Image 1 (spheres, chains in turn purple, cyan):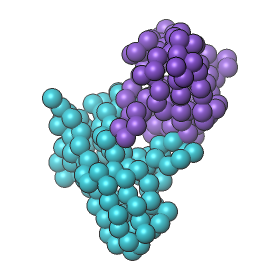
Image 2: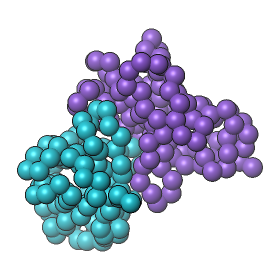
Image 3: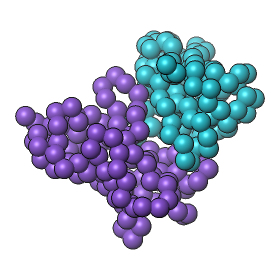
Length: 112
Length: 114
């Protein structure tokens, strides 16, 4: 079955610094990959997704992620962190019609 | 605007009681899902439905049941609540197949079982 590992349960960056949230997946077939964001006391919102085609995917709020099959990775990046980016981020994988599996989440803190 | 709502937002109950959590969506989506969120585990799928009268077990379905009598609602029932079911529960819906379509999430229900 598919699975996701998010490296680092907490990441702290300064405002304006690069954001890098790591995600590695395991899947027996070409996967669909997702990043969701959760703000306090809210549900999850989709940031971006990879299905097929271009391996660099751009999402909302300046985030992007690159699918690297050889590294089984789908890391999320943003060139310059903003205070409003502070939230919990979840990586998820789906094996084309089967259930979606989420990682444990990474809490991003942005320092002024 | 279309939305997905959950009720109640907070619930405290006792061990052994039956509890039902409501989920209602106005997106007219065929697919609906229930997840639980626990620290260190992310979200885990409990049950899901691809349409009226269709239900399927997810990763952590023991102790839970769902029924789908219309497009808009997918209530989640805990038959006999246990302390291990203390969690935050999220309902979600999507337009097409689970794998591809974006899932829209409700605000969550925080359930405490004493």
